[in-house]
Length: 437
Image 1 (tube, rainbow, N blue to C red):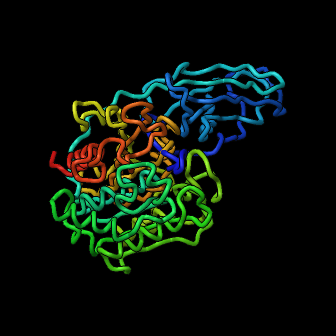
Image 2 (cartoon, rainbow, N blue to C red):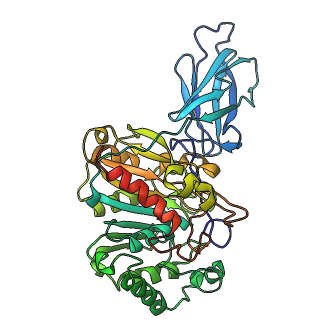
Image 3 (cartoon, rainbow, N blue to C red):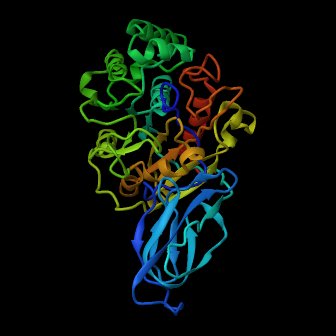
């Protein structure tokens, strides 16, 4: 859904969701221990941070000077300290979920020019086993963008007994692609698949027990977002999704934002890209707090969010939930992420499953989506665990070159049913989180 005809999004491995958008630039004084500096600020230090072995830009890394002045790497992995006096500086990177950086620190001697190319490579931490949190099964919801939006629809429809709310950004109706990517290009992308065909398939699969009864969909909140400037998923596709939903629930249960001039992106106040931007990390700021809206729909009145996330990021072993411990066989990553607010370690919390889009997983944009989707700050104060499953690109079999979730059948004809391998893996993680310790 982001690249092809519908920019595809995948992978989530090790990064974070702090500042996005090309690296911060904070004025900084030289370290007190480094003398021989002039009183005038004439130079700077800049570089990039990437994931070791993948050369993937890593956002959200904190770079700190010895005197405590810091900056944060942006969506392209870049960072910069500007306005420094001449002298000697030591730059040290750090980020939760990262076990080591190479080098661990850099000492830079400045004269009268910016020292560029001061770069670091991060090693992902060893993934942990996903624990049981005794989360509330009645508080499990799902949200997604692009291919993740389509997967959110599939999860909600196929497992409607388990999901109690859904937020869809630039997705499409259930089974719109009908086992073939060509259906997206020729008909689904234009809203041209007859709605009666999709509802008939849904009803047939429910009658056969291959998906949950459609009666479970009624009465549960649904948030939809479609930007007026989206050139990847036309609004008529989301309009058709709205009509599809109205076959199974009242219009009063649906909130549909279709008036914001947004391009194809996840919409959050945490994003650095402007509302009309099309491109990585596919996260735009439109002065709309979509997360507050859909979380309020899901869970009622919310406590005010934290300014920045205060919980912990656990990089979990996703392979444990795929057949044969081999997630790569179904175009899913070896690891996923769970955001854990402090309260959720000791009390039952709710669960949001948040699904990136094509070219948006950790292998593409690091942890930008995991840390900057705008959900975690609300999760801190409202007792919500946030699961971030991860998809990856697969050039051959299955063919998924842009790291999308399966919304057209590349993992098999059952991709939209309860037996679908990707949905089975995601549901297994949800069941683990809601299980008793």
